[in-house]
Image 1 (tube, rainbow, N blue to C red):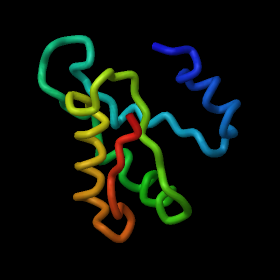
Image 2: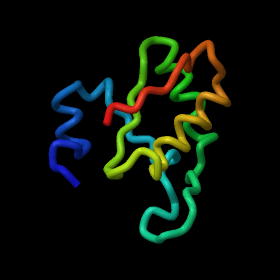
Image 3: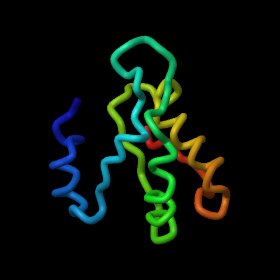
Image 4: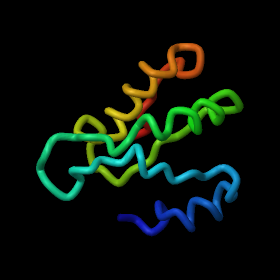
Length: 94
């Protein structure tokens, strides 16, 4: 993992009030070749709801390809759960 993507570096860059580590959106199979299974996405819904009411959110991870990334699964799940009002679209930033 790149050191500039670690929590402390991101908090320093964007400020501690704007960075949230939501473990519940992590892939419980990240160490194996198993399918992507989010840890507990329901645990992130209300936190992300209130963030998205105020501003856009960015989901970060260290995967090399967004096509095989839990971030894509999490974004789709959140868009479906929170609806178009809060999640107007998902954009992958390479």
